[in-house]
Length: 208
Length: 208
DNA sequence: CAGTTACGCTACGACCCGTAGCGTAAGAAG
DNA sequence: CTTCTTACGCTACGGGTCGTAGCGTAACTG
Image 1 (cartoon, rainbow over the protein chains, first blue to last red):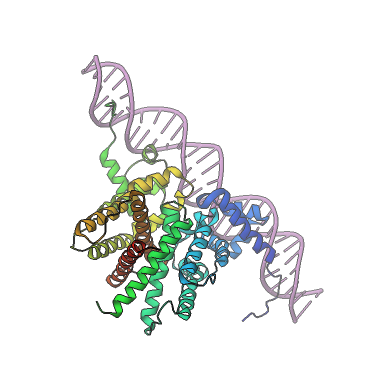
Image 2: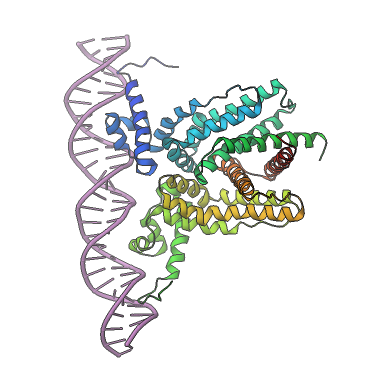
């Protein structure tokens, strides 16, 4: 795959410096006032170097912010409720950070008109979050907290639904309603979600 | 309050033309490429006129998009489930439109660094949606589908939670996951939400 | 060594921003 | 009708960002 290209290799230090400078610039200036020239200056790099690696502001910021989502982990606290609550708090803490707060919605907005950008976001950010949902379900099934869904299509649909509910609620709470996600909110949300899951599954099993 | 100011009054036609031109420009160019000059040209108005009424792009777009949210209504279909499902579909249809799709997330992103803008969004967009939740709860209580919460604080918290869950899930589904909200999804979401509400309330009543 | 690729730097036209200045248009007050 | 006040259209401007081209140099390969 890598044909061992000749010539001067790209500087990995420059890559790291650029991404870090991008995050710093996001904190200081926010999305709208962030400029490629400013990032280049902060990173100690020529502006042209940025354009050799990223098509523009959108792609650069996605990559700069994506690594922050690697922090998200699903702890094993013994119960599905505790796991969900913990991951909700983690996700909320991530969204409280000024880098992500100002960048996430902006790139999503841009992605509505740019399919390539949408794919990039999906691969490097959304997929990581979705993985947590699948992981949590599997773990809960092993514990016997959730039944094993025989139909793969139904299972996938349910997972998508759960994912949109969790991520959507947390994002909406922190960015639109602009209120903090504290332990109390996380607990009440988790209760709502899991009770809904359980009751909905039970209702489907008995008919309706 | 209005001291009947003298002088030439502002043209209401210009106002309407500008807001409509803004929506048209959003459809054609999207948020990032929308410019004040383009809007002015489309509206047949001088650029300076725009700046005499709006501080900038953000405020203009919020006002231009806000009126679209007036379409949202809570139908009375006889049951809470049917009402929720209908309003979810309405909201989703609104978010499918290119004007709102590209603008809503962008202004929310900007609002993370601009408190005045956040208030403007809250007053002219979010409040309208939240009203539907309160209206739906009241109607369900009158039908006997939901118990009357005696504690006003708890009631308000629950309403906030429900609002973030509904709006967040629909927004996340349409804009982040970039998948359509069809009748099937709306039904499954409604079941999840209402079962969760019922089960959570029952659980709290019996202790825990 | 030559060949290839990345880098830093400069300069550039193009575009958009937001404002100032001016003459004119439209109502309100007398 | 005249005067006053405000809104409008238009032009022009300095300032900033964009994205690219061109060039000489640096780094690594065969």
